[in-house]
Length: 71
Image (cartoon, rainbow, N blue to C red):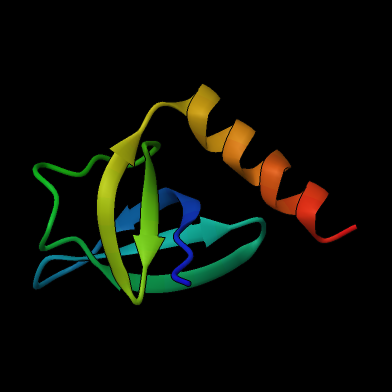
C-alpha cells in the first residue's frame, strides 16, 4: 500500500525543488511533477515528489483522516 501525505509549500528552491511543511517538519521534495507551485499551496507528497496540488480544505481533511487512523 502506498501513502501520500499533504504538506504546505513554504519555499521555492532551485532545480524544481520545494520546501514543504508536514505539521511542523520541514522537508525538501521535488516539484517536477506539478505545474507552477506557489508558496502557501498544499501539495500531496509521495516518495519525495509533490504529485498533486490540493485545495486547503481537502488537505486538512486528509490530515484529519490520517490522524484518526493512528488512534
